Image (cartoon, rainbow, N blue to C red):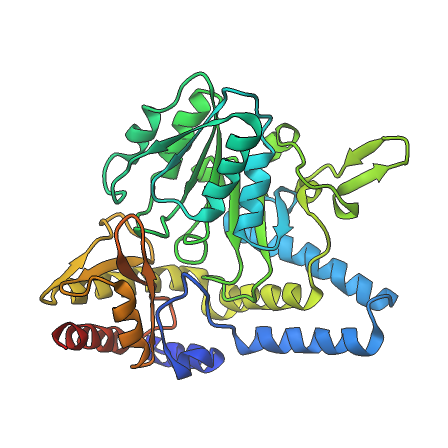
Length: 389
């Protein structure tokens, strides 16, 4: 049996980008596995040589969609019929937000720590329907988030839209508790899972959320342009279609007769690019079968904890992420007012991280299963060097 060190080395060989960089920005983009790249190349070549109209290519496209829904469902402990394929988290958040049957004076609750993927659809319904948006001020997310949100729920509240893990602070929010409070009042819960899925176990049944959007290109190490939206089976009839296309219909005619598909496929806008489907499917299977989700989740937790300990031990470094964290870690460095200075200083040392501007200017790292403890020690040394420059 391979040791952890041998396993990590084999994983890094499968992820060439980790050979080029100290890759600590999976929260933005994850590295692509060789097997995913190969699957994309092969299908793109088939598309070039055979065209997209051959029966074999179309059958393959349908198989990829079906099996990718199954793989996404397995990851979330959902049913394939509850999964719609999307292009990214933003598409799923738009579908979940705009699909609510809004009326003037209705209210939505969100937090001060949200990504534009969740906020901008709320601004659209605010403008279009006169919806009032109420913001829960959770500071950095380390306090009683459920209590703060509960105080904002009124008889006009229709939707709570929030992240599972905040991109801007790294806080892991108590979704199960929030969903239970919401459902006591008949309120939908829509979740941005971009920084959770692939970093921590996600069980939508246990969480009790109604809608859960996720991307493939971050922690799931897939290509850009493919994601998914979970829609709880009993909420399917209550979420209206925002988009409709051939992909979403069960049947229609030219007199106004239209029946959407009976499952979450009704929310699919159109066919996704076949090579991206192939790449994401193969990446997910590699993560599940070759790497192991349980090992991944344990490794992410271990490395994030290690990074926190190293950074907290540095003079002039202030870690902002609260103890209830997942795989993101945010920090500030004394004397460096512009976080981009630190980002660029680390980039010169081949270390990839990113800056965050709100609610506090800071930098963010996102260690994942392919990183090593030595890389985190190199990061800490580099941060200390840049602080002293």
